[in-house]
Image (cartoon, rainbow, N blue to C red; front, top):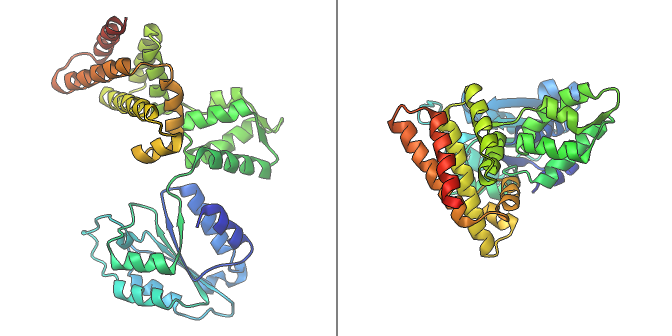
Length: 342
């Protein structure tokens, strides 16, 4: 079941006995929690709602609560947070003994007046476990693994409309670029954008440019474009700015290597007829990153991408094995690259 479908059902007051939420999307997770909580009238929540953290509380306590009848109400709501026993995460240091057999028995016959929501948002589900196989059959599974660009745009527009704000298309595009379409990051940026645009109620590109800082990934994306565009002065200035802002040279280089690897892989897969969605799935990267990569590589030669990639690998070796100045290494890389692709 997808996010929109379950939200529509919950907003109508319709629910199932068991839910399993996966995927690391804090903003969507919090919205789901609020929707679940609205199933219980505020006057009944003290007695009919509870949340249990599996890293500090035995599962048996949550199950006991779930099996209890609602107290002067129609439903009981139980949140089971950080259900790591459903994932591949290693928690050997945790000494809590969770009643997994008891959970399997509960899932086979869940209490119809209870709504139990398991949150396994860290790590991947371990499908080899019997309990995971059982919960997949018994629960409504809501995957928040990836939020596409279209859905992010819709959620941003919806958030703004609730407060009677609009955003210019160019401003929204810039916001997505600056944040890498990270939904939680975008939602954290919106309050200050609204505050700066409170009089006009319209967020423009200038406001976004002034208030939303570029991430390292975004700066590196610009740096890659400067390198491939043979804009040596712009590339050196941007690299120098990153060093001055205390970014670690090895980290900058690692992101550069990662970006060029993505460009090379995207170029090859495009030649073999892969679509944006197919490339994102094959490489296990966000579709928006693939979209930007596809836009970039259409005008780039695969041989030039390889030359740049190999040059950055050499910088990495030098940074790890010598005390040479990172700025000098990058300048030498640019000069060598320009000479090789001339």
